[in-house]
Image 1 (cartoon, rainbow, N blue to C red):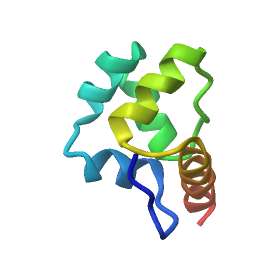
Image 2 (image 1 turned 180 degrees about the vertical axis):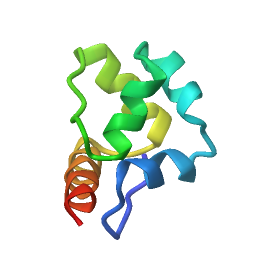
Image 3 (image 1 turned 120 degrees about the vertical axis):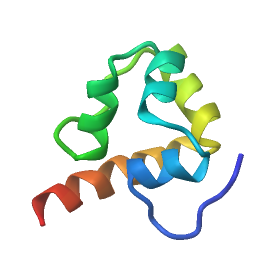
Length: 79
């Protein structure tokens, strides 16, 4: 697991791993629009435990880092 020092948003987590939204969607078993909505801060991930595990592995982050990224995406949407 990579430990990120600065707070990143959901898009940055994905891009740091060289993934496209469609890649994440297929691996986590959600719609691509769902991934985009997370990144735009429109929705927060509501996932099963196995999907959370898959997302953490894809993004190479800890749960706390993922949680911070979800928060950051939501804050960015308010700007």
